[in-house]
Length: 460
Image 1 (cartoon, one colour):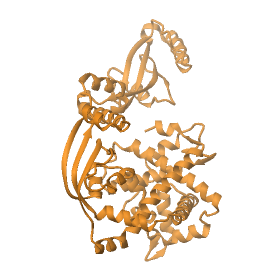
Image 2: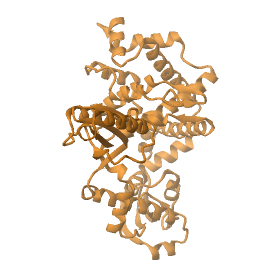
Image 3: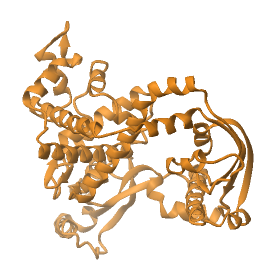
Image 4: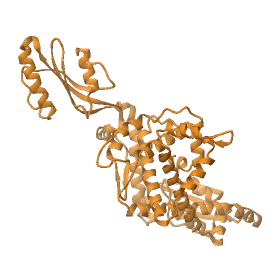
């Protein structure tokens, strides 16, 4: 899902600006603005920090892009955040490589690109006021926006060079074309792993261990103490309250005097009202957080010390997530069993120890078999190179191990092959580029020193 979004053209993304009346920077921007830690930015890549304005902008654009495609993002915010951070790190790595190669976009190129963006134009011409209004709605200065655009253009320069290195041979085109057009018939045996039954006990155990992942609401654990003025007198009550406040502030509230009454202890969610607490004390409780852990207040009847003990989670009831957890455990066990199967080369043993599904295949292209069974690209030749009457070696698929016996093959006619060859080159080149590009990025990540602002991930 995110990969598709990230491949959107820059200009198309910017065009979304004209559709919405933007609110200047989202709640996310407000949250991250207050974050602090060893890393001042979103992340640090080889000693260079990625500024928060890049994160705010990328997050906002990704979220809006998804909403335009009718995605409900209410439960995807943490996932979007991680994906955006990963994309920014990848972009920073590539930008640093572009700098080394001397192919970063010039100020003139950035300026020309801005002038061409239709969202910044009025009656077909660039309008400075429109430009400033739009980028300001994202909390961006002209320098910040130009830096984002410079990085984008520089990365595109690097990608263009990588693409120019991709070579597709005539043999590759021939092989690929035949895979698309050649039709085969035969007998397919899919060996599927035996998965242990998921018991109620397993589901409950997983739920208890991962309650945090199934939280419906975040709250805070609070304790409220009262020192009664009427019982102790104002002087003694005040002295006791100050002593208790000092201990709470220092985190040393281990023993509470008997004269102190604990009037509340528990979790509070979304400014919920706590019974029997005066209104002003309720307001104190609502204001507590990890940065303000203790409050001190006085009413006509007593002194109140409210203490923030930490964040708490209200979990979704077990019955509501039971089926979801069961499916998750089944997928995990299936994946593990499949990995174990793929290590085994003894077909007889595989057939004995696992269940099988047999299908008769009639006039399917190899590409259709790939889609039907989820065959990996590396295993295609085990099908493509078969001769009539032969049985394939074990082929790994998404759901098990496939054994295919080829009984008939129909070669495409020459006109079909020639016509397909005309359009297949860009597709093969794009496919090879994606592989090379991912290997290139992975190699950069392995060599890089990357640190992520952990507080950004913790504050969802």
